[in-house]
Amino acid sequence: MNRRTPLRIPAPRLPSRLPVDAFVLALLGTVGLAALLPASGAAATVAKGASTAAVALLFFLYGARLSTREALDGLRHWRLHLTVLACTFLLFPLLGLAARGLVPTVLTPQLFSGLLFLCLVPSTIQSSIAFTSIARGNVPAAICAGSFSSLAGIVLTPLLAALLLGGSTGGLSADSLLKIVLQLLVPFLAGQLLRRWVGGFLVRHKKILGRVDRGSILLVVYTAFSQGMVAGVWQLVTPARLGLLLAVEAVLLAVMLTLTWYGAKRLGFDRADRVAIQFAGSKKSLAAGLPMASVLFGAHASLAVLPLMLFHQMQLMVCAVIARRRSHDPREPLPATSAPHPAPVGRITPPPAPR
Image 1 (tube, rainbow, N blue to C red):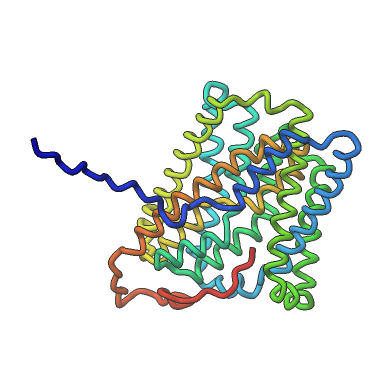
Image 2 (tube, helix red, strand yellow; image 1 turned 120 degrees about the horizontal axis):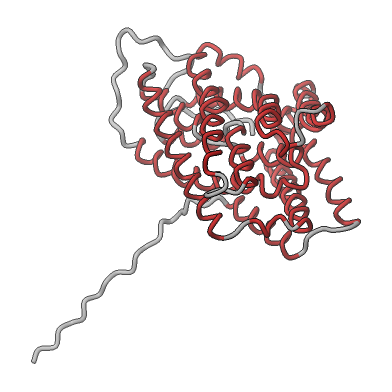
Protein backbone atom coordinates (compact mmCIF):
# COMPACT_ATOMS: atom_id res chain seq x y z
CA MET A 1 0.00 0.00 0.00
CA ASN A 2 1.49 3.29 -1.07
CA ARG A 3 1.77 5.92 1.60
CA ARG A 4 0.62 9.28 0.36
CA THR A 5 2.18 12.49 1.44
CA PRO A 6 -0.29 14.34 3.68
CA LEU A 7 -1.84 17.38 2.08
CA ARG A 8 -0.53 20.57 3.62
CA ILE A 9 -3.06 23.35 3.89
CA PRO A 10 -1.41 26.74 4.25
CA ALA A 11 -2.49 28.67 7.30
CA PRO A 12 -4.52 31.76 6.49
CA ARG A 13 -2.54 34.95 6.62
CA LEU A 14 -3.83 37.98 8.40
CA PRO A 15 -3.53 41.28 6.56
CA SER A 16 -0.32 43.13 7.36
CA ARG A 17 -2.28 46.09 8.64
CA LEU A 18 -5.61 45.56 10.32
CA PRO A 19 -8.03 48.48 10.03
CA VAL A 20 -8.19 48.89 13.81
CA ASP A 21 -7.57 52.35 15.17
CA ALA A 22 -4.95 52.27 17.93
CA PHE A 23 -6.67 55.22 19.55
CA VAL A 24 -9.87 53.19 19.84
CA LEU A 25 -7.88 50.49 21.64
CA ALA A 26 -6.59 53.16 24.03
CA LEU A 27 -10.18 54.32 24.57
CA LEU A 28 -11.28 50.79 25.38
CA GLY A 29 -8.39 50.47 27.84
CA THR A 30 -9.47 53.72 29.47
CA VAL A 31 -13.03 52.43 29.77
CA GLY A 32 -11.68 49.28 31.42
CA LEU A 33 -9.64 51.35 33.85
CA ALA A 34 -12.71 53.41 34.75
CA ALA A 35 -14.67 50.19 35.32
CA LEU A 36 -12.00 48.76 37.65
CA LEU A 37 -10.85 51.98 39.35
CA PRO A 38 -13.52 54.68 38.95
CA ALA A 39 -12.77 58.11 40.35
CA SER A 40 -15.01 58.89 43.32
CA GLY A 41 -15.18 61.42 46.13
CA ALA A 42 -12.40 64.00 46.10
CA ALA A 43 -10.71 62.20 43.19
CA ALA A 44 -13.87 62.60 41.13
CA THR A 45 -13.91 66.35 41.83
CA VAL A 46 -10.30 66.68 40.70
CA ALA A 47 -10.93 64.55 37.62
CA LYS A 48 -13.99 66.61 36.68
CA GLY A 49 -12.03 69.87 36.98
CA ALA A 50 -9.18 68.44 34.91
CA SER A 51 -11.67 67.19 32.32
CA THR A 52 -13.26 70.64 32.03
CA ALA A 53 -9.83 72.20 31.46
CA ALA A 54 -8.98 69.48 28.92
CA VAL A 55 -12.13 70.21 26.91
CA ALA A 56 -11.28 73.92 26.81
CA LEU A 57 -7.71 73.09 25.71
CA LEU A 58 -8.96 70.78 22.98
CA PHE A 59 -11.21 73.40 21.43
CA PHE A 60 -8.53 76.05 21.71
CA LEU A 61 -6.20 73.78 19.72
CA TYR A 62 -8.96 73.04 17.20
CA GLY A 63 -9.42 76.75 16.64
CA ALA A 64 -5.69 77.44 16.41
CA ARG A 65 -5.14 74.69 13.84
CA LEU A 66 -8.15 75.28 11.60
CA SER A 67 -7.20 77.49 8.68
CA THR A 68 -10.13 79.79 7.98
CA ARG A 69 -8.44 80.95 4.76
CA GLU A 70 -8.41 77.42 3.34
CA ALA A 71 -12.07 76.98 4.23
CA LEU A 72 -13.04 80.28 2.61
CA ASP A 73 -11.03 79.43 -0.52
CA GLY A 74 -13.21 76.35 -0.94
CA LEU A 75 -16.41 78.38 -1.19
CA ARG A 76 -16.08 78.24 -4.99
CA HIS A 77 -17.24 74.61 -4.77
CA TRP A 78 -20.26 75.55 -2.67
CA ARG A 79 -22.63 72.89 -4.07
CA LEU A 80 -20.40 70.08 -2.84
CA HIS A 81 -19.96 71.64 0.61
CA LEU A 82 -23.69 72.26 1.02
CA THR A 83 -24.30 68.63 0.08
CA VAL A 84 -21.88 67.40 2.76
CA LEU A 85 -23.37 69.74 5.36
CA ALA A 86 -26.88 68.54 4.47
CA CYS A 87 -25.76 64.92 4.90
CA THR A 88 -24.09 65.67 8.24
CA PHE A 89 -26.64 67.94 9.89
CA LEU A 90 -29.89 67.04 8.09
CA LEU A 91 -29.95 63.45 6.77
CA PHE A 92 -28.10 61.98 9.73
CA PRO A 93 -30.38 63.67 12.32
CA LEU A 94 -33.50 62.60 10.39
CA LEU A 95 -32.33 58.98 10.43
CA GLY A 96 -31.50 59.32 14.10
CA LEU A 97 -34.99 60.62 14.86
CA ALA A 98 -36.47 57.72 12.85
CA ALA A 99 -34.67 55.32 15.21
CA ARG A 100 -36.99 56.50 18.00
CA GLY A 101 -39.35 53.80 16.78
CA LEU A 102 -36.82 51.20 18.02
CA VAL A 103 -37.33 52.27 21.66
CA PRO A 104 -37.73 50.29 23.90
CA THR A 105 -37.78 46.98 21.98
CA VAL A 106 -34.34 47.35 20.36
CA LEU A 107 -32.71 50.36 22.03
CA THR A 108 -33.02 51.64 25.55
CA PRO A 109 -33.88 55.35 25.92
CA GLN A 110 -30.29 56.03 27.01
CA LEU A 111 -28.77 54.25 24.00
CA PHE A 112 -31.18 56.03 21.69
CA SER A 113 -30.02 59.39 23.10
CA GLY A 114 -26.43 58.37 22.38
CA LEU A 115 -27.34 57.24 18.85
CA LEU A 116 -29.14 60.52 18.16
CA PHE A 117 -26.18 62.48 19.53
CA LEU A 118 -23.91 60.51 17.18
CA CYS A 119 -26.06 61.72 14.28
CA LEU A 120 -25.51 65.36 15.33
CA VAL A 121 -21.71 65.29 15.53
CA PRO A 122 -19.69 66.98 12.72
CA SER A 123 -17.79 65.04 10.11
CA THR A 124 -14.15 64.02 10.38
CA ILE A 125 -11.31 65.80 8.61
CA GLN A 126 -8.23 63.60 8.64
CA SER A 127 -9.82 60.24 7.81
CA SER A 128 -12.06 61.81 5.16
CA ILE A 129 -8.98 63.25 3.45
CA ALA A 130 -7.03 59.99 3.74
CA PHE A 131 -9.81 57.82 2.27
CA THR A 132 -10.58 60.35 -0.46
CA SER A 133 -6.91 60.37 -1.46
CA ILE A 134 -6.73 56.55 -1.55
CA ALA A 135 -9.86 56.39 -3.70
CA ARG A 136 -8.52 59.04 -6.14
CA GLY A 137 -11.18 61.58 -5.25
CA ASN A 138 -11.25 65.36 -4.93
CA VAL A 139 -8.89 65.81 -1.97
CA PRO A 140 -9.08 69.65 -1.82
CA ALA A 141 -12.87 69.36 -1.64
CA ALA A 142 -12.58 66.84 1.21
CA ILE A 143 -10.29 69.21 3.11
CA CYS A 144 -12.70 72.13 2.75
CA ALA A 145 -15.79 70.01 3.45
CA GLY A 146 -14.27 68.69 6.67
CA SER A 147 -13.26 72.20 7.70
CA PHE A 148 -16.74 73.59 7.05
CA SER A 149 -18.32 70.73 8.98
CA SER A 150 -16.03 71.30 11.97
CA LEU A 151 -16.77 75.03 11.98
CA ALA A 152 -20.51 74.48 11.72
CA GLY A 153 -20.44 71.72 14.34
CA ILE A 154 -19.09 74.06 17.01
CA VAL A 155 -22.48 75.79 16.96
CA LEU A 156 -24.93 73.36 15.33
CA THR A 157 -24.11 70.20 17.31
CA PRO A 158 -24.78 71.65 20.80
CA LEU A 159 -27.87 73.52 19.61
CA LEU A 160 -29.34 70.51 17.79
CA ALA A 161 -28.54 68.28 20.78
CA ALA A 162 -30.29 70.66 23.16
CA LEU A 163 -33.34 70.95 20.87
CA LEU A 164 -33.73 67.30 19.84
CA LEU A 165 -32.56 65.50 22.97
CA GLY A 166 -34.45 67.74 25.37
CA GLY A 167 -34.22 66.45 28.93
CA SER A 168 -31.25 64.18 28.16
CA THR A 169 -29.01 67.24 27.96
CA GLY A 170 -30.84 69.42 30.42
CA GLY A 171 -32.78 71.29 27.73
CA LEU A 172 -32.00 74.55 26.00
CA SER A 173 -31.64 76.63 29.17
CA ALA A 174 -29.59 79.73 29.79
CA ASP A 175 -27.19 77.71 31.97
CA SER A 176 -26.62 75.08 29.28
CA LEU A 177 -26.04 77.72 26.62
CA LEU A 178 -23.58 79.53 28.88
CA LYS A 179 -21.72 76.27 29.52
CA ILE A 180 -21.51 75.60 25.78
CA VAL A 181 -20.24 79.10 25.06
CA LEU A 182 -17.63 79.10 27.82
CA GLN A 183 -16.29 75.58 27.34
CA LEU A 184 -16.53 75.20 23.57
CA LEU A 185 -17.04 78.40 21.64
CA VAL A 186 -14.84 80.83 23.61
CA PRO A 187 -11.71 78.59 23.52
CA PHE A 188 -12.29 77.88 19.83
CA LEU A 189 -12.56 81.59 18.96
CA ALA A 190 -9.52 82.34 21.10
CA GLY A 191 -7.57 79.76 19.10
CA GLN A 192 -8.70 81.35 15.84
CA LEU A 193 -7.69 84.84 17.03
CA LEU A 194 -4.27 83.68 18.24
CA ARG A 195 -3.58 81.42 15.27
CA ARG A 196 -1.24 83.87 13.53
CA TRP A 197 1.01 83.91 16.61
CA VAL A 198 0.80 80.29 17.76
CA GLY A 199 0.38 78.60 14.35
CA GLY A 200 4.11 78.15 13.81
CA PHE A 201 4.57 76.64 17.26
CA LEU A 202 1.75 74.17 16.62
CA VAL A 203 3.31 73.08 13.32
CA ARG A 204 6.76 72.60 14.90
CA HIS A 205 5.36 70.54 17.77
CA LYS A 206 2.65 68.70 15.85
CA LYS A 207 3.49 65.23 17.20
CA ILE A 208 3.70 66.33 20.82
CA LEU A 209 0.44 68.25 20.60
CA GLY A 210 -1.18 65.24 18.96
CA ARG A 211 -0.39 63.28 22.11
CA VAL A 212 -1.83 66.13 24.17
CA ASP A 213 -5.04 65.88 22.12
CA ARG A 214 -5.36 62.16 22.67
CA GLY A 215 -4.41 62.40 26.33
CA SER A 216 -7.05 65.06 26.90
CA ILE A 217 -9.72 62.96 25.22
CA LEU A 218 -8.73 59.91 27.26
CA LEU A 219 -9.08 62.01 30.43
CA VAL A 220 -12.55 63.11 29.34
CA VAL A 221 -13.54 59.50 28.66
CA TYR A 222 -12.16 58.30 32.01
CA THR A 223 -14.08 61.00 33.90
CA ALA A 224 -17.33 60.31 32.03
CA PHE A 225 -17.17 56.55 32.48
CA SER A 226 -16.14 56.89 36.13
CA GLN A 227 -19.25 58.98 36.74
CA GLY A 228 -21.30 56.33 34.96
CA MET A 229 -19.84 53.54 37.08
CA VAL A 230 -20.47 55.41 40.34
CA ALA A 231 -24.04 56.23 39.28
CA GLY A 232 -24.65 52.62 38.18
CA VAL A 233 -25.78 53.49 34.65
CA TRP A 234 -23.95 50.51 33.14
CA GLN A 235 -26.40 48.16 34.80
CA LEU A 236 -28.87 49.32 32.15
CA VAL A 237 -26.77 47.89 29.27
CA THR A 238 -26.66 44.17 28.50
CA PRO A 239 -24.55 42.33 25.90
CA ALA A 240 -27.72 41.71 23.87
CA ARG A 241 -28.45 45.46 23.81
CA LEU A 242 -24.91 46.15 22.65
CA GLY A 243 -25.31 43.64 19.83
CA LEU A 244 -28.55 45.29 18.75
CA LEU A 245 -26.89 48.71 18.89
CA LEU A 246 -24.11 47.49 16.60
CA ALA A 247 -26.69 46.16 14.14
CA VAL A 248 -28.56 49.47 14.13
CA GLU A 249 -25.33 51.39 13.54
CA ALA A 250 -24.32 49.05 10.72
CA VAL A 251 -27.65 49.81 8.99
CA LEU A 252 -27.17 53.55 9.63
CA LEU A 253 -23.69 53.52 8.07
CA ALA A 254 -24.85 51.46 5.08
CA VAL A 255 -27.75 53.83 4.42
CA MET A 256 -25.53 56.93 4.58
CA LEU A 257 -22.84 55.41 2.36
CA THR A 258 -25.52 54.53 -0.20
CA LEU A 259 -27.28 57.90 -0.06
CA THR A 260 -24.08 59.93 -0.32
CA TRP A 261 -22.80 57.95 -3.33
CA TYR A 262 -25.95 57.58 -5.43
CA GLY A 263 -27.51 60.84 -4.23
CA ALA A 264 -24.40 62.76 -5.33
CA LYS A 265 -24.62 61.01 -8.70
CA ARG A 266 -28.24 62.13 -9.12
CA LEU A 267 -27.18 65.68 -8.27
CA GLY A 268 -24.75 65.65 -11.21
CA PHE A 269 -21.39 65.39 -9.41
CA ASP A 270 -18.57 63.57 -11.18
CA ARG A 271 -16.75 60.58 -9.71
CA ALA A 272 -14.03 62.56 -7.89
CA ASP A 273 -16.59 64.75 -6.17
CA ARG A 274 -18.80 61.77 -5.31
CA VAL A 275 -15.85 60.14 -3.55
CA ALA A 276 -15.29 63.25 -1.43
CA ILE A 277 -19.02 63.54 -0.65
CA GLN A 278 -19.29 59.88 0.32
CA PHE A 279 -16.36 59.90 2.73
CA ALA A 280 -16.96 63.36 4.21
CA GLY A 281 -20.73 62.99 4.39
CA SER A 282 -20.97 59.53 5.96
CA LYS A 283 -18.53 59.80 8.86
CA LYS A 284 -18.60 61.30 12.34
CA SER A 285 -15.78 62.83 14.38
CA LEU A 286 -14.90 61.02 17.59
CA ALA A 287 -12.40 63.72 18.57
CA ALA A 288 -15.07 66.45 18.40
CA GLY A 289 -17.95 64.38 19.77
CA LEU A 290 -16.37 63.11 22.99
CA PRO A 291 -15.62 66.51 24.55
CA MET A 292 -18.98 67.89 23.44
CA ALA A 293 -20.77 64.97 25.10
CA SER A 294 -18.96 65.60 28.38
CA VAL A 295 -20.25 69.18 28.36
CA LEU A 296 -23.80 68.37 27.24
CA PHE A 297 -24.57 65.16 29.14
CA GLY A 298 -22.55 65.45 32.35
CA ALA A 299 -22.90 62.30 34.47
CA HIS A 300 -24.73 60.49 31.64
CA ALA A 301 -21.96 61.09 29.09
CA SER A 302 -20.65 57.52 29.32
CA LEU A 303 -23.73 56.01 27.67
CA ALA A 304 -24.01 58.97 25.31
CA VAL A 305 -20.55 58.43 23.80
CA LEU A 306 -20.76 54.63 23.57
CA PRO A 307 -22.60 54.64 20.19
CA LEU A 308 -20.12 57.18 18.83
CA MET A 309 -17.11 55.07 19.88
CA LEU A 310 -18.57 51.98 18.22
CA PHE A 311 -19.57 53.85 15.06
CA HIS A 312 -16.11 55.41 14.78
CA GLN A 313 -14.36 52.04 14.57
CA MET A 314 -17.03 50.65 12.24
CA GLN A 315 -16.72 53.56 9.80
CA LEU A 316 -12.93 53.23 9.68
CA MET A 317 -13.04 49.53 8.84
CA VAL A 318 -15.81 49.82 6.24
CA CYS A 319 -14.47 52.96 4.56
CA ALA A 320 -10.98 51.47 4.36
CA VAL A 321 -12.38 48.60 2.28
CA ILE A 322 -14.44 50.95 0.08
CA ALA A 323 -11.49 53.29 -0.50
CA ARG A 324 -9.27 50.42 -1.66
CA ARG A 325 -11.93 49.24 -4.08
CA ARG A 326 -12.56 52.76 -5.38
CA SER A 327 -8.83 53.13 -6.07
CA HIS A 328 -9.17 50.47 -8.78
CA ASP A 329 -12.06 52.19 -10.55
CA PRO A 330 -11.38 53.12 -14.19
CA ARG A 331 -10.64 56.80 -14.66
CA GLU A 332 -13.55 58.79 -15.99
CA PRO A 333 -12.88 61.16 -18.88
CA LEU A 334 -13.75 64.74 -17.99
CA PRO A 335 -16.71 66.08 -19.99
CA ALA A 336 -15.79 68.89 -22.35
CA THR A 337 -18.52 71.12 -20.92
CA SER A 338 -17.81 70.44 -17.25
CA ALA A 339 -16.80 73.31 -15.02
CA PRO A 340 -13.28 73.12 -13.64
CA HIS A 341 -12.71 72.22 -10.02
CA PRO A 342 -11.33 74.86 -7.68
CA ALA A 343 -8.28 72.67 -7.26
CA PRO A 344 -6.75 69.88 -9.37
CA VAL A 345 -8.20 66.42 -8.92
CA GLY A 346 -6.13 63.26 -8.88
CA ARG A 347 -2.92 62.32 -7.21
CA ILE A 348 -2.00 65.30 -5.18
CA THR A 349 -0.43 65.75 -1.83
CA PRO A 350 -2.86 67.55 0.46
CA PRO A 351 -1.62 70.26 2.79
CA PRO A 352 -1.44 69.44 6.50
CA ALA A 353 -5.04 68.94 7.58
CA PRO A 354 -6.47 70.61 10.66
CA ARG A 355 -7.63 68.20 13.33
